[in-house]
Amino acid sequence: MKNDENDVNKTPKGDMWIRIITQGQELTIDCDEKTLAEMGFKDNQMVYISIGMSRNMKKRECLDAPSLQPAPPRESLPTLLLLQPNYFEQLFSLMHNLSSMKIQMKGGRELPHTKAQVLSRRVWDILSLMPTSPKLLQGFKHLDIPLPELLDPSSAQKLMYSLYIVESLSVKMCQSKYPEEEEKEEPWIRTFVQHGGLRHLFDIFMSGVLQRDGGDGSDWQQDCLASLLKVLCHLGVEPLSQESRPLEMIKSSFPT
Image 1 (cartoon, rainbow, N blue to C red):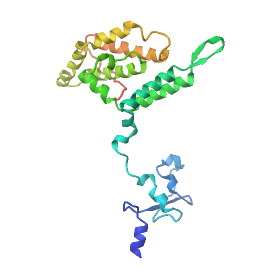
Image 2 (tube, rainbow, N blue to C red):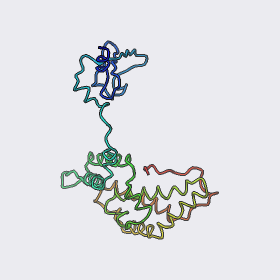
Image 3 (spheres, rainbow, N blue to C red):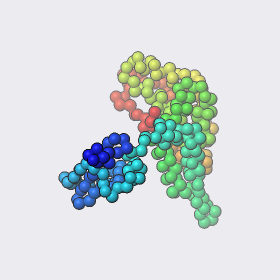
Image 4 (cartoon, rainbow, N blue to C red):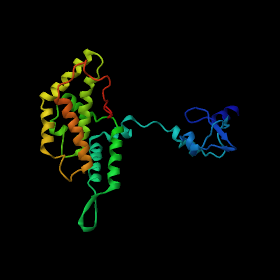
């Protein structure tokens, strides 16, 4: 009988079930994976814990408990799924479509859709939380992809994303604390310039595509233009000597 009771009080994985009671109420499986703040817990709140399964808990509920489900495979993680080429391109298409939405005003005048602009920025926030695209990162490191594909001015959002990668790769040289590391990083900037990267960025600037009205929206174009000028200044100006460099370098906020 004791063995049977022990088996009942165990999870499918062999762990013991526990009952949590506080303020005269038992915390059910519906509270699983909630934070203490969400549960309304306060400081010094008394909690009673005992071994055993709740009488009100059904066997099916035990099997469906989120904490008992196996972890999803790595390739099914949302951040890695979004990095796949099809989904990754859809994020930029979504930002482009949202930022291009207009509101028809009286007299035929059109204004940017405020809510759509906000949602477009939210998509960018999601993109910023994800790991850097492996395809673009490796493409910039090895420069084995044509520059018009890596730095595409047809989409202000995608160009700005690529500019952040260029800035991140180039800033590593300036942030290096050891000369031997600096010597390893510096050739990438030289290779990028010799590969025509600086010329391509300058051609994008001179084309005026980021100064035109319409397209991806003026706000996105202005932000992208600011990033482009920053990278042009960083790559086009001769690096400062170690003695004349500022003590603190500005760090890129984009994940690598």
